[in-house]
Length: 268
Length: 358
Image: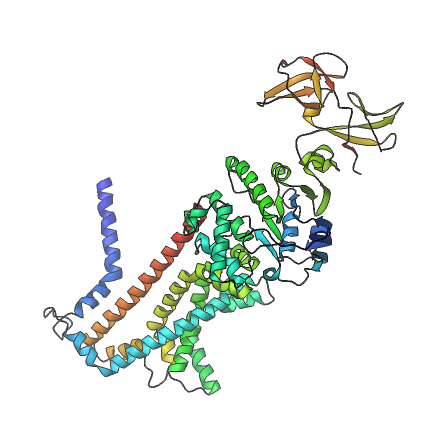
């Protein structure tokens, strides 16, 4: 009975893993396929990675995506920090609830709706679409995530620490900079990486917010796939996957180290 | 380098709290509180939780603003002065040590804000670490310290900027019993050596009585009594003070003036040496267990021993004197047993007689 149950358990687990990760593994494996055909294994090769570097269009898009993800994550983290500070430290100011709701709305807002709203806004204001609007769109989209992450971390940070700093002669701003910021630094790093990842692989909002000359990598891949899957795309996707995995892993690691440090402080 | 703070001369109080009130919605945290703290004094605010003592301390530190009233430090009005400009430092109940800095940098934090040069800061931090017996701990992280060591770092950090008044919020609250007594002596020694005025907030009566030169007992936002620890214990100003500080018996009765005043109770008469209450007034007498003498015979009020507890230096008897009146009596005589009848003699000096609160 017990043995049967254990076999069933193992089977379920395997099925789950296959369901979740088989497509990704196949994609990554195929990017090392020497053959042009997706269905035939022609031996191990890195020729598609080499070809990728020579594909200027694709490389340009990759560059656009990286620059956009970095910039928008930076702005989203800074704005998210300001929003989180006002929500965590300024007490119950009038319209706080409204502000709280407005900040969190994009979390549940359908991406298509948000993209369309951004597009209408840019058109109405007569803003030419391009790299700038792309970054603005991604900041709007990712700021709610950074705010939520930073708000949670700020709430865990003991306000008595800042009071102690002020008591010792630091102005409220210096106190925040010297005492609160080091406490939430791990959360800032992980919020940045989260926003970076979200912006890097976003397709929907980018399609609405960007203009000619600023085609992001996901957009380029999507449009090329419709004309047939090139092994180059597989290689690019694998690289993208790797980058996201590294970013998420680093974020989790930084957060865990921060949590361990604060736990040690409170327990011992 | 001297650790003594420079203070002005004259006998004017260092801190003068004048008619300060503070409410939170319907809750009155401070109700018209006035208090003076002298230079070099070790002052304690004692009271149960929620009595407003922490609010008063936070008003002095600048983290709370009184609704009305004035706070004067050396004659200077503190109103509108933010915490970072007040020459007052606070030791927080949770210590609030900066976990990302080492011990040295924690202590140096206030000095760096004053813009002192490197050598001065290093010298002063070394002197403070020596004072608090943390000489070799400068480079330790906060999470590597024990509770007692953290408490001393918090003290050194708060003393570093040379405050004119040091506020201590439940400074011994987080320490275990054994460490507490040692730390009490240590705190007193540091207060004496630095000459800084200390104002401590505590709910622990032993702590207040052991440490302070003067104690203010607070209750529901008001000050019940300000006096020396001895007077607080021996001559409590109200029934609340008598009950909150130390162990006591409350005996209800009526004041009667015959040839001499006495308190007529359900179980007998207790002579009163002095009495400022009118004839026929209902009143409560507070008598400490150790002030009642239990004897096997002789004059006094008779009672029956119901229970006794050996407490090391003395024995606490529970003596039934009336139908539903049981008195607690401390005795050094061990020869009592349960069910035995005893005679209780009350002290002639009875300073703690309170009119019934109407």
